[in-house]
Length: 319
Image (cartoon, rainbow, N blue to C red):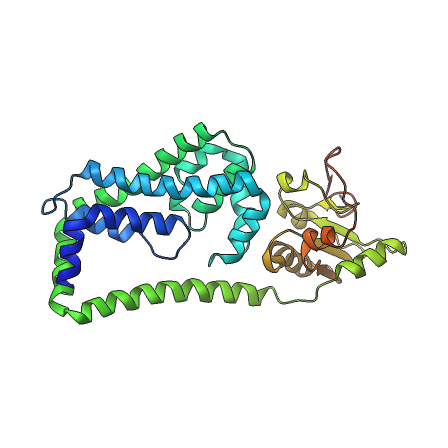
């Protein structure tokens, strides 16, 4: 443990840069604790607070810019891929879209304090065409606030941090083992949350071919698109309506079947809304397996964005 602290004191700037870069790139290796520790060691280290803050912001910007450029090139496909490999719940894309579309680039100033938001917000900024200057400005401010708060906490509670480090040093190899166990438990907890979330989405699905046959035969179910308005503007299944949480709360149970679809791994958002509708009293509600991506891949047509999607009060909401 003593050798690890010596490495931090001697190569603290490089360690912070790599840790922040790797975390912001998507790896489940938290950088905040290292920033707190290096902040607490400022008096005994060979680096200044400004240098520490600078390398942390640079590492975050480098990773975030990579996500931004990926979003600009690949659009929403990159969002889906990122959410698929993330340990965060699959509804993260929809939640991030809601926050970003409401507040715009200024939301990047607090993105790193919201679990699962930072990298997805960077991809989304590129996907929606946020100017690079605006992205870099607000992302730099956000990275500075995030890293600066950790460094400040470390320096503010340096005595307590030093005492904790002394305990770990005295434990020797056991201290290193405890740190490894803590990191493993952190990753395992994220994995378990995701597994439990996916398990909660287990329910009957409707296939693309089955939905297409229903529409062709004239047996039209109510089709609900639960994606964000931004995603719906790029096309939706013909006849689909837009349903919000408020619509669900006010809705009355229709006689026809309801098909819900989204564009996320495990049909997460669609399954969540489907369960809410079933709890409301809807009898036959099924998510579309594979969402709109499976519909498009099967060669079926979608509606463009020449007209806005119908709201939930036609015909779901009866006032």
